[in-house]
Length: 360
Ligand code: DAH
Image (cartoon, rainbow, N blue to C red; front, side, top):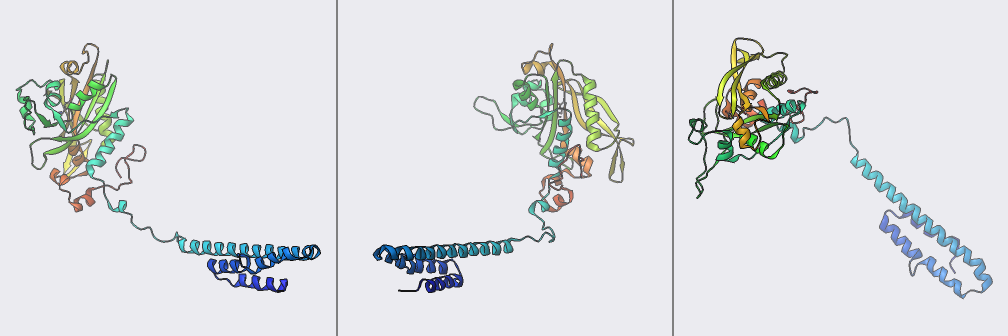
C-alpha cells in the first residue's frame, strides 16, 4: 500500500508545479477524480477492520482535505495573477496628452449658436419655446393673421405655394414664424409668453436674402401688457444679446396686417471699415418688426379682444447673427463649406448661458 505521506508530498508538489488552470485540473482529477489516487485510498477503508479504519480513516481524510485546500489555494493564486495581468494591461497613463475627440473637431453652426443664445435670454425673462410646422396652411400663414384675401401684403411675401388641392386650398412654406402665434393662441390659454424660433421661406436670393432663412417670433398675451413692456423686453434683449451696457433703439411706425399699431425697430451702430459697433455711432440697422396684436387676430384665434391684449415681434435670426459675429454674406450660411464652418462655428461644449457668458 502506498505510503500516505509520500503520496501527499507527490500530489502537493504536482499542485505547485501546475502552470495553469487546466494543468491544475489534471492534478485534481489524478488525485480526487473517480479513479484518482486519493479516491482509491478512500475506497480501501470499507474493507478494513473497525480498528484499522479508526486509525487510517483520519489519515486518509486528512490527506483529502489538505489536497483540496492546496488545490483551492493554487486556483486562487491563478485568479489573482490573471487579475493582476489584466490590471497591468488596462492601466491608464493620466500624464498622456488628451486626444482630440470628434466633438472637439465638429463645430456648431452660428445659427444654432445664436438660437441657443436668444433662447437663454428669453427663457431668463420667463418665455417658453413654441414650434410649428414649416409647411403651413394659407389660413394660418395669412388669413387668420388678418391678411385680407387678395391683399397686396400677401404678394410681398414671395410665397412658395404647393399645387392647389382639389378643393382649391393650397399649402405653402411658411413665409414667417407668425402662424405659430395662431397655433399657440388656439391651443393655450392666456397668459401666454412664448418665443418661436424657426425656419421660414421666401422666393428671394441675394447677398442678404436666401430662400430659406430664420426668424424668432415673440408673443405675449394677457390682460394688460402694453407697448411699454414690449419696448423694455426688446431693449433688455438687445443689451444681453449684443453684450453691451446700452443700445440705442429707434421705434418707427410701420404696417403689418396682424398688429395695430405696428412698429419697426432699428438699433444704433457705427460701421467702421467692415466692423460694426453697437450702442454708439450715427447708423441705424433694422432688426425686427413688432406691434400690439390686432383685435381681429385675437378674434380669429378665439380670444375676446375686450378681455385680452398683448404684443408680438418677429426678428431675423440670420440678420442678428451676421451683425453680432461679423459675417457679411448670408448665402455662406447655407453652403455647408467646412472651412467657413470651422472659422465661424462654435465649440460644441461652450453652451451659451447668462451666467457663464453667451458668446465664447
Ligand atoms: N412676420 C413679420 C415678417 O416676417 C415680422 C413681424 C412683424 C412679426 C410684426 C410680428 C410682428 O410678430 O408683430 O415680416
